[in-house]
Length: 274
Length: 218
Image (cartoon, rainbow over all chains, first blue to last red; front, side, top):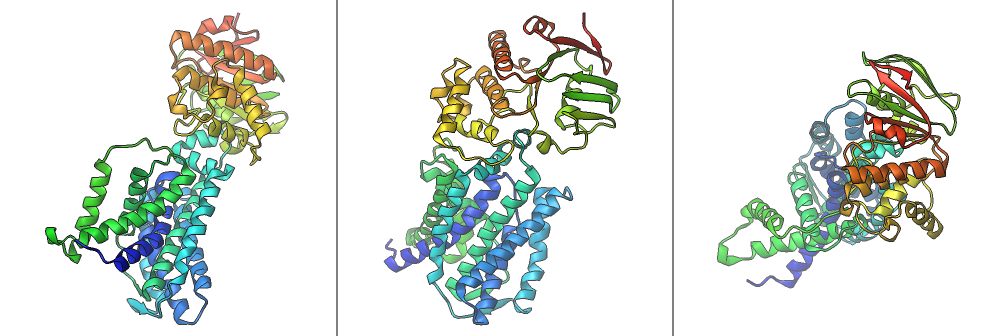
């Protein structure tokens, strides 16, 4: 089993892009304890926005900013449905992801996919954003945000507007996921309306691998471990797909992903405090 | 000053009236189901009253959201785990309590201030700021909750059955700490309990709650 170096580099690059998605998943599933399923839609939203803007000659960084902005708007809608209208977290996310399918098709001009010239220099924006979010989680705001995830009653007792914090958490999360979508479409020079399927699983796998492999306990460092987990996850997938001994083929990707998640979860459980 | 007039909550509290003067210590005793926790919930904002008015220092807080009311009223409930977050360090818990009424910078002076507050407990928690709260016993967590409740300048301290989940030794320790903190901080305090032996622990007015009404205990 020999993996070409170029393929490892490609896996690491895609891992870095999906690190942005993993951070988004961490912010909802871990930090504010909100099972948000908007991600499958907001990932494609970011990809579609970046693709259409790139095709119309816009600056790639501006395109990414617009992706993140619209992603945060998707998070805002999910948050409002949950906080203001009392719709459960799962259902409000499902509704928004469902609606986003039509919105994404509209953005893409009713075409199921869009091709454009690839642009790969933007993927490194993940690193400063991850560091910025790590600092944010270590701040007073971050403490209050995480307190909402641990105990809403505690957070209210100490003067936190839990509804507002939940909405802000969802906006941050979906901005990161949408940004990941934008980066991925720029990296490939391609966007497909169904490419969001499995975003949640890939993001969760990265978060879990990061938590298990790295000995970090504090939330700011866990943001960094999400990115490293995502890179490791992509490398694991690459290694698995190159193991000729097992006869694994590309169509076995979901099977491999599931097995990797289960294997990592069965490894020695470390204390995980955020 | 806390002033409650004609408070009605569900069918539990019936036209309840209560005035607590600044820096006064009021103990409310009563059997289970008499409405003590409903009164606690109504003052802290957890429960919305059907009728009546709650004034704090002249301001009407009856319809104020609970998170806003939390900037004026500190509360500690019976479960030691609900007043602290086990998966955060002692320092992080203290920081959240300190930022109750708004974001503040946590400088080294503030950390020293936390240590001074924790030293009142005489449990050595001031030397364990970086430890996770999960590592503390139930009594230590409740004591930490008490310190967190008096760390800022809240006007009123509400304590609801704070010893009911503790063993007798931890319970007695928490009562001593409560007495010390309330006296040191000079807070207006409303202590709710079903345990009549707490009547001897404090100098203050004792009221009895029965069938949703309050009366002076002799």
